[in-house]
Image (cartoon, rainbow, N blue to C red; front, side):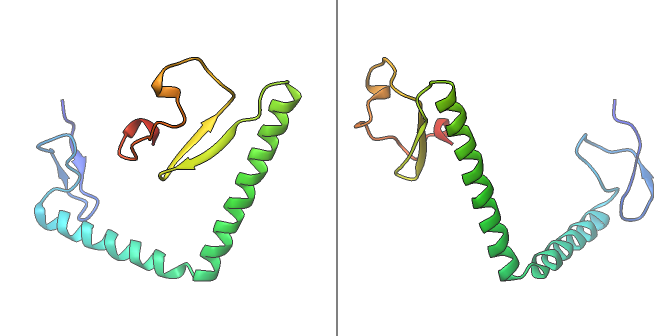
Length: 118
């Protein structure tokens, strides 16, 4: 059963016609969408190019730090260190060898359209 809700735009109580309905009318829905779009653009404009690049560098540093710690843990445990390779835009991580057919053959091309590898 769908319970009564309050419209975030006008504050009016309403009974939604479906479970995903947020606003009471099409007018409120359009006003809410417009407000959210302007808020999103306003936020995006506040981020400078320098801050964006600094954030990306920080993410890359944290990622490198994580992988270094992970590799050290694998080495300490006596396990093979995972190898990461990028083939046709697909990131493949390997932890040694495994028995299998063509699915595990590194010479077989992997489709970038496959959702399994994303």
